[in-house]
Amino acid sequence: MSTQKETRQRAGTVEENALRLDTEKAEQIIEALNVDLADAYVLYHQLHKHHWNVEGAEFLEVHVFLQEVYEDVEAAADELAERLQALGGVPHASMTTLTENATVEPEDEDVYDIRTSLANDLEMMGDIIESYRQHIELAEGLGDYTTAEMLRDQLEGIEEHAHHIEHYLEDDTLVAESATN
Image (tube, rainbow, N blue to C red; front, side):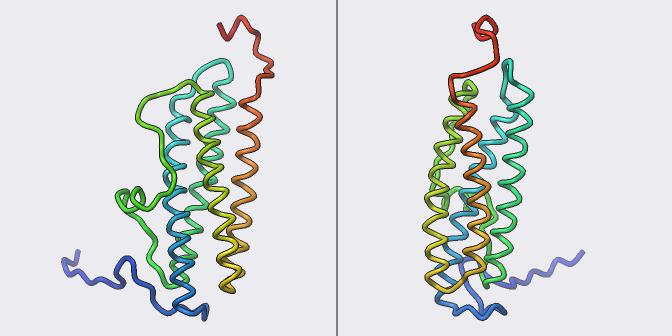
């Protein structure tokens, strides 16, 4: 194993890209995508926490649902990182950098009832949805239609998951009242 270290590209820098998007425009999009990436990892970890800690009569369905959602979020994060790298940027990768650049605030370490947990997930998703809409507009305004389309596709998935969580939070249930007391 070689002990020689060579930095190919410093974090926070933007190099010319093969996509022929002007570096100044790419810098703005890369900054936005790194925010989306940071937010995605905060959401991913919170969803995973809830997946581990869910209990109750509807445990299995919610457990499986949360796994599907965090897997989708992880896939979206990978796509974001690959796109910003293609634009000439360096994706945020360390937990410290991701946390510092996230615009969403995670729950603390305590374990909450599933309604509170899902409500917190829904709130975070709502913040991310708003950010995505702004970043889609930014990418389109700078002529990066591919990034805008990628974000649109991801936005559709986040909105769908948020809609499902909204349904989980409704008062109507098939669980007998005696099972919830």
